[in-house]
Every structure is written in C-alpha cells, then in structure tokens.
Length: 113
Image (cartoon, rainbow, N blue to C red; front, side, top):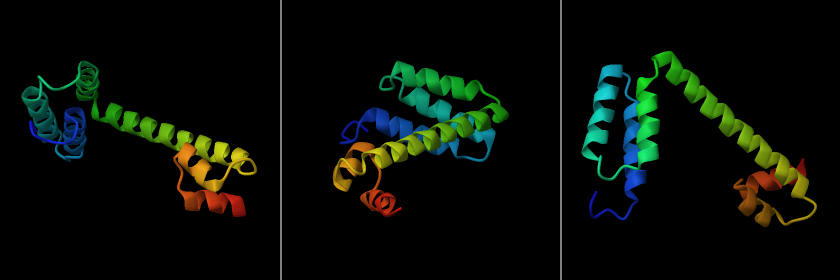
C-alpha cells in the first residue's frame, strides 16, 4: 500500500466494502476491525466514524441503510435523466452526457423518445 499509485482512502474504502459482502457476520466484523486497526494511521477520521456506525448497526439496520443508499442513487439518476431531457433541445448530446454523467447512448435514446 505504501508504494501504490491509488489513493490510500480508496484502497481502504474498497477493502471495507469487500468485507461488508462477507456472509458470516462475525467474520465480517473481524475483517473490518482488522482493516481499521492496520490502517489506523492512514484512514480519514470521518470515514472511520462512518465505518464505526455501520459496525454498531444491527443486521436489520444495515439492510435498511443499504436500501436507503440505493433509493438515493435511483433518485439521483432519475434527476439526471430529467435534467438531460430538459437540455435536449438546447445542448448537444455529448455535452449533456458529459455534464449529467449519463451514457451518450442513453442520451441519444432519450432524444429518440
């Protein structure tokens, strides 16, 4: 990790997200605790607090949080699509795709619809 080209925070975040996918809850907590312990000098304080809160949640609470995060992503995507539709007659599809983060093909499909 010391010689990595990638950002340390990204590596830590990716490792913890991978550990969250473990099916065994005890194993999941042990792996995350190990990551946090070994990366203590590199981890950002805000992210450490987020992980700590995640660890304190019950299984039901975690599922609820994950569903809430997914709902926010869906709402954000719907908002980007609405913005793209509003800009279709004004800007090029390429510029709309660049500014909204949507795929160019998706913008072109919106244009056809």
